[in-house]
Image (tube, rainbow, N blue to C red; front, side, top):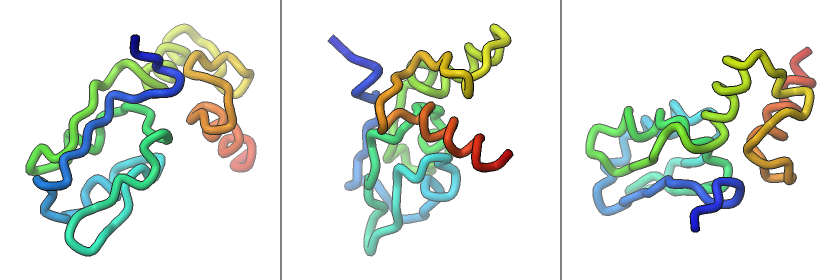
Length: 110
């Protein structure tokens, strides 16, 4: 069974990659990094499954099922009037959790 707290639906097909680096520019969590001939899937567990990388990849080298991970939890919380910084995250509270990273980032920016 798929565990959305520890797994993501992110799929990367490096054989299709043309190294345009669009994914590195649009990913809010730095999941991809530039490489010599293709981008590198450097931090897959940081993926919040927003779908920006897949939508911006001109050769469909990336696939992700948006609406199932941390991005969905954030959107749902906003729609319900919940505060993600108040510990009401539903995508996991471990150190690698994107919500924890966002909470820490939000706190620093205040």
